[in-house]
Image (cartoon, rainbow, N blue to C red; front, side, top):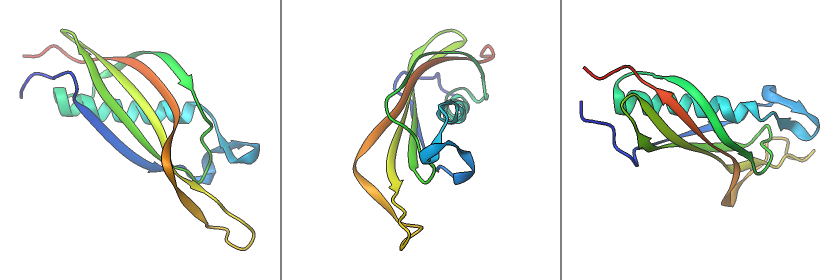
Length: 131
């Protein structure tokens, strides 16, 4: 296995189910995006280090726009710093499609012309020592 390199990146797409809506307007709580960051960080850790790693911290968490049930989101994790055992990552959640239901078309949705940045953060993952 080669050494992890700054710039390594993974991207996930996910539909936000209505079962995750907690607030009026089908809003989803901010923790939903953080959970997606955890999944992407695990994928990136496996890809770069062959281990799931353990999250040590989140910081610089920013909620730029709401997530809603019915959204399709793109979650990205990028390796921005490599330490001996620590891996600094940058995360984003972009809404790429949004539900646009009406009484006449309850399943209607639209692909957004430009992805909408919903959440961003940085975090640190710790991996076991390399053999």
